[in-house]
Image 1 (cartoon, rainbow, N blue to C red):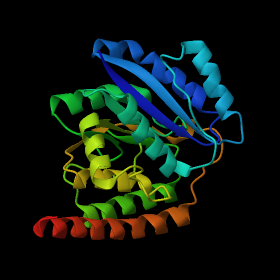
Image 2 (image 1 turned 30 degrees about the horizontal axis):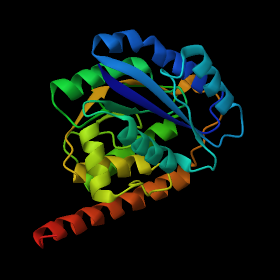
Image 3 (image 1 turned 90 degrees about the horizontal axis):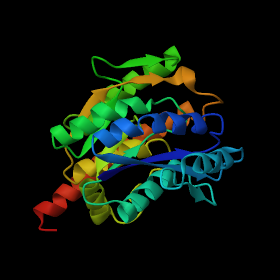
Image 4 (image 1 turned 60 degrees about the vertical axis):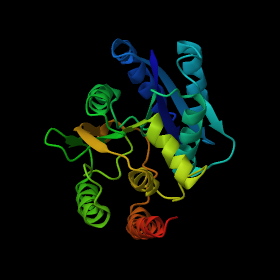
Length: 264
């Protein structure tokens, strides 16, 4: 039996994280049928609400072999959550284990993990993305102006970054192989994610592409109407940081390619 590690970075998600863990546990039997033991790893990023206590209560409910709580004693933002997930996966995971990353606000449904796992195995891919831009994708509860900005960002990233097989560069719901995460750290070192804003999801995707990753996407339903509590995203700052991050990543690709040409 292989393991599927599900990392859920959270900051002040006390209203959402308990429900999300319950929804994941509902998928454990079907995942076991596929040959994967489910291990849920919620990460508390120094929350100021009851997020940590909700996580610890779920350990009591489901057992510490099913729910492994990770605690940041200092707030490290989403970048820190990604780097912690990468480090723990490399420490705990076996050769054929998978890592899933997902937002901790209950806007992503765990049930979509099944086509994602099927695709990563059947097509022998390194990363599968739950994409908002497949024919069978849907979005519920997202304000019109945010959907417009998301669609414009998708066009920009596709033009700037041109990663084969990718339309959705920013969705946080993805599955990765151990092989590609190990290559990521080999090329970019420990704590490979550097962007401090939500652009870190795009950075992670592009860096594994530079490591030779192959990608696929499956459609899913983004349920922003299920999220309780206020959004933590500053739309203006996120857009500015994401635009500049794409330029930095293009330069990084050129630097790496030039190094290879020069025998580096």
